[in-house]
Amino acid sequence: MEYQALARKWRPHTFDELIGQDFIVRAIRSSLKNNRLHHAYLFSGTRGVGKTTIARIFAKSLNCDKGVSEVACGKCPSCIGIDNGSSVDLIEVDAASRRTVEQTASLLDNVAYKPASSRFKIYIIDEVHMFSKHSFNALLKTLEEPPPHIKFLLATTDPRKLPITILSRCLQFNLKSIGGSVISTHMAKILKKEQIEFEEDALDIIGKAADGSVRDALSLLDQSISFGNGAVKKEQVIDMLGIVSSDMILNIIELVIKNDANQAYEILENINQQHSDAIVIVDELLELLYAISLYQTTKIINNKQHLEQIQNIIKIATPAQIQLLYQIVLQGKQDIKFAPDESYGLQMILLRMLAFAPTPTLANPVINNAPPATTSAPIPNVNNNTNNQITTNHQPPQQITQPQTQQPTQPSLTEKPKQDLKNLNWNALSSGLNLSGFAKQLAVNCSLSSVENNTIKLQLSPDNNFLLTDNNCDKLEQAINMAITEDIKIKIDLMQPVQITPQAKEEQIQNQADSKQKQDFINQPVVQNIQQEFGIKVDENSVTLEKPN
Image 1 (tube, rainbow, N blue to C red):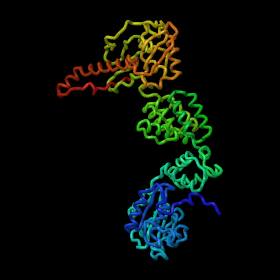
Image 2: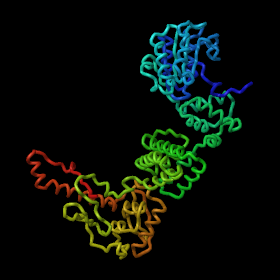
Image 3: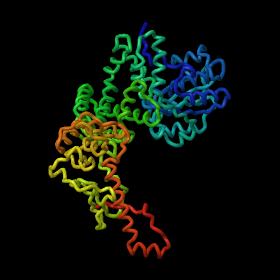
Image 4: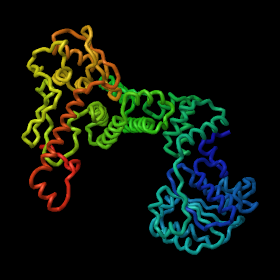
């Protein structure tokens, strides 16, 4: 027996066999049941979602010998003729091959004649948007005053190209794309009936690759059966479709968050060698970052296969980090076309992710997060300060100092005098360490707990746990050993710091300086005169400070 493609063999013949279009089916069944039949119907939607299939089933319900019914018998000559394409009263044409007005006119010449053996003469016109302007005009005349025995079932993938005069004379049904899970479930039922071995993960991949089209999914399923020698296996489907492994992409995301640039770059290179299309890799990155963000925010998981990896990632990444990574990849996708080579564009996306991955409060100095402003207020200069005193460059000439908690001035660390463990000033020490990047952020976000047996015990907030890597700890320990008189070890506990951290102290002092400058502005005579003249009061919170260029 000749082999028949799955897409043809398992094409639905009844409304019950249709998947994913429940709303459309319910509306058509209701019109059939109540005999409220329009003369023209327009089915629109992407390829392979069931436009012409619904039209054929509808035609059977209209012309079934047992009468107009929402369930055609499927056994009468009329139903059988529609199924095998031999019914003379069902005229099915492709508008793309009959575009001219002459061809359309010849098609409609027989409209006035009654059907040969059926209840209605039914025209199924596929891709109707391909008609020329004059062809639409020829069709319009028939749609305006159709004979009672004529039904038009039109299908299109682009309803926007149809004239409004045509659209206004049709009942329109917009078919939606079928979800990947619905398609994979449908394929599983077919394979069980076909007695073909399969893996559910493989069907999920095919369902996703089909992009909402059942016909495309069944065509890919046919191909995967041949590729897998009679079985549908996940690894073989991945090879066949050239799909990027989600496991490897998730590994890259995790390594980016951990700031492991070399390992992340190595994995990306391996992926790039296997898959020549950089856009496919970028799209997979975007989908997985979306899945992570969705689960992180709502606990809704749309990727159950990789739930464990996603849970591991959200333990070390903040929501802001994931949002930033998504935006970097999304922008990078637009920039790839301008790169000398797609692989370079892909690598630059990874490098940007590594450069900008931290949360905003840690990736940039906290002082820069002071309230935005329109009056001049430069960032405090803290490079050479070793005690808790910070000199500001704000417009008011006063120098802002930390009140009440000043300690005796100590030598600057940049001048190389080394601190003694017994009199360790952690704020001064951490601010002057020769560090940069994440290691610097680790230092200024820790607070001193105690010093015991040449071990400095520090406390780090759990919110900043992604800073606590072996690499950052080693750099911090080396920098401290260069700045004090004894060889030490450090121990960092993840807990809410008891004492204020250097970073928080700088932010506090900056806020005090900003508040002082705002008050100085409000107290200026010209501002006081305006308040008195208009009977208003300037709120300090409404004053913003602008930092000079």
